[in-house]
Length: 187
Image 1 (cartoon, rainbow, N blue to C red):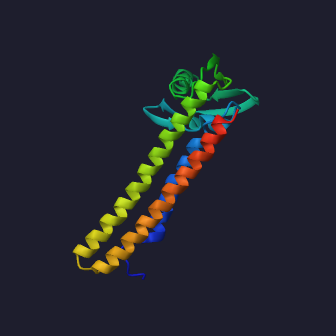
Image 2 (cartoon, one colour):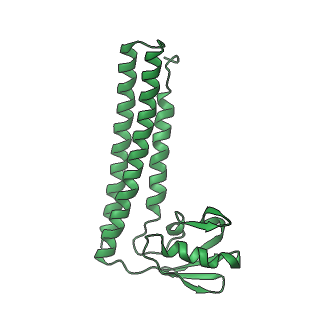
Image 3 (cartoon, rainbow, N blue to C red):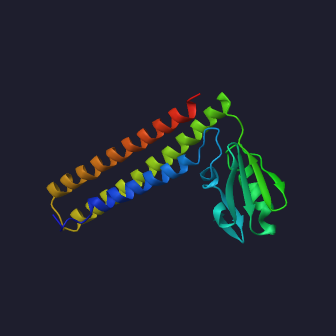
C-alpha cells in the first residue's frame, strides 16, 4: 500500500486546508456585531505589495458595534482606509489621525442577502480548491499508470478513494456554508 504513487492522506490534508481557509474567511462575515476577525481577510497595498491588515495596524473592539483600527505608520492611513472601504463588507471608516473608527451597521435584510452572496463566493472558491487537489491526485495516478508504475485496477481503486475524499470535502464545505447562511439570516 505504501508503494502507491499518491498519498491519499496528503490529498485529504490539502482538501482540509481549503476548508480551513473557508472557515477563516467566513468568520470575517459578522452578523451585526463588531469582531476583530471581520477585517482579517482585508489586504492593504503597502510598501509596494499586498499585506494583511494585521501587519500594518492593530484592530480593537471598544464597543459591540465599533471597531478601532490603529495604523502604525502615519503614511499608511489612507491605504488602510481605502482597503476597508473597498473590501465589499459595506464598511465606512472615519479617520481620526492614525486611528480609523469603523461603525458596524445594523444588518438590513438587503445587507444580509449581500453577506450570503459573499459567503457563497467563498464557498465556491473552497470547492474549486478541493477540485484542484482532486485533479492533481488523478493526474499523478494517470501518469503513474502510463509510466507502468501501477496497474489499471490500482488506478481505479485509488481514483475511487480520491473521489470519495473529494465528495466528503465538498459536503463539508456545503455544511459550513449552510451553518453560516443560517447565522447570517437569523433575525
